[in-house]
Image 1 (cartoon, rainbow, N blue to C red):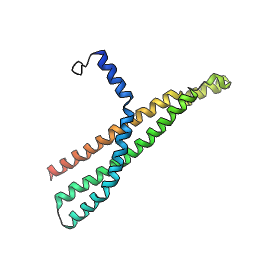
Image 2 (cartoon, rainbow, N blue to C red):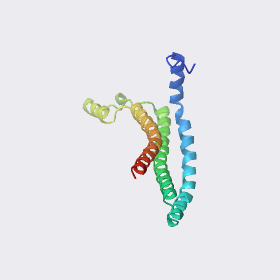
Image 3 (cartoon, one colour):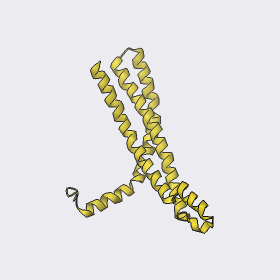
Image 4 (cartoon, rainbow, N blue to C red):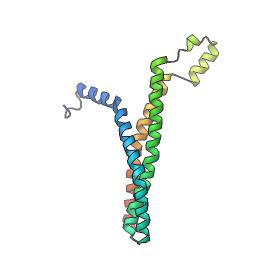
Length: 157
């Protein structure tokens, strides 16, 4: 089935997996943050020790490791915070539903202004979902950027 990517059943499976990927994102982010906070200290100490021993190659590799850890910690913490906000908005959306501007009984001018400025609650939930998924993907993409930049500089040097 996975070889027939045009099959509607396969597309439906992919859509369902895409909708449920947030749980896996949170698990990966949580374990990664824990591991990174645990690893950044020893990696930094090893980089300082390699620098004192004047081991240039090891110093570069460990320094890139420290930078990569810092990038991942920042991005994954941001991802977890936004994903938590997204989960909260989903819970609020479940309880309250979408914003019913007509039931507020405001004047037409003010209702039109609110619809323009505030918009739909569903759109807010969807925007948060997109931001969370993009931040999670970009977190690992940035690490490859750091590696590519390092390899480029090393090959020029």
